[in-house]
Length: 195
Image (cartoon, rainbow, N blue to C red):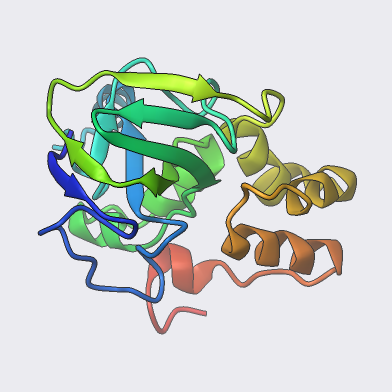
């Protein structure tokens, strides 16, 4: 777990280089389950461990099946809210020289998720992550990933778009899907200049 003072947009001292695609109010903290790293090591023989996907928080006992959109958590002095699943990008694939890593991440749903910060403050390594509210218990990160990336269920997409807690970027992607537009995922999954 990262530690330090958390503002509304990031951890102080942990600046985001690509502010177009990362960081900001809806993506202030990227959270990734520690349990996934053993799976990546076993499946792809990668030398990868906590922090390997660029997360700010690497967590235990939380994953895409038991974390939901809109969940509010207290971590030390900080209060956060789950805003969206992460859309995997090409950067970890390049780092680990595994071309299909981002596509595999999207396909298997081990994406992690983002928090928006509702109350700023200090987070320490030994702080407990305490669930304080779950307004959308039927909308796990896994289910959101399934709707956007696999099932393309328009009724579920409309339900997600209507959620106040869902990040604008995800609402935009879901709205395009509902309207029949398909995303060219290659630049996001494989890197710039890839069509």
